[in-house]
Amino acid sequence: MEYRPGKIGVEIRGIDLKKNVPEEIIDQIKKDVHVHKLLIFKNQGVISGERHAEISQWFGELESTFYKHERSTHPDVFRVSNDSAEGCRGVGRTGWHIDGSFMKQPFRFAIYHMVSVPREGSTAFISLNDLINRLSREKREKWDSLWMVSNGHYDIIHPLIYPHPSTGQPTMCFHLGMIAEIVSDVGHFNERVFDYDETKAVLQDIYTEINKNKDLIYTHQWEEGDFIISDNLAVGHEATPETQYPVSQVGLRVLHRTTIKGVNTPSKT
Image (cartoon, rainbow, N blue to C red):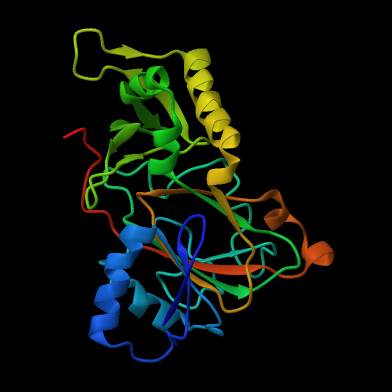
């Protein structure tokens, strides 16, 4: 195996995920994904849906909350495309987010495989711990006091910043396109639900901080055979606008994704 470190994550070459992988290598991969947050396996060819699911289960139980497209290669593989006949359209363009922020226990890992590569269309990733470490002291204190409520899930409330359950590093639970309300100082005498304008201001503030720290963003230019394992709780991501361009303009895009069931509810303690 050859590791090539990047801005966030590492490129890994010299391993064929279609074949049986020794247990000691699997154990190392499971450790490395928490260290590097993003593992980018190159030159994997086309990995079957069954094998994609098998690899995913190295990290826990598969769980998917999305519509199953009829062309999906496995019940737990979410198939995304810029052609509705080939996969689900309009995915990933609702703002920076982690997957499953609306769930009581957000997904632990997201695992992607690019099956058909268009001429344009990337996925941007950012280390949430690195972003938090860039905040001013005043802003960090403010964000530390905030909690988020997702659209349609008013019984679930998560802290905006909390310690990652596996690494202890500060991370974030958020989805800029699916937050209904921001609440401050949950559990304290001065707990307060923000109104619409205040909530939007917080979301804009998060977006501004990400945009201000573009040097932290890794924009992955997909190539045939790319297979990415992401620590979903540590990495924010967003699809670029070009991912929605029609087939006639950029060619067919087909991306397969699995998600691993969460086991921890975001908590300040």
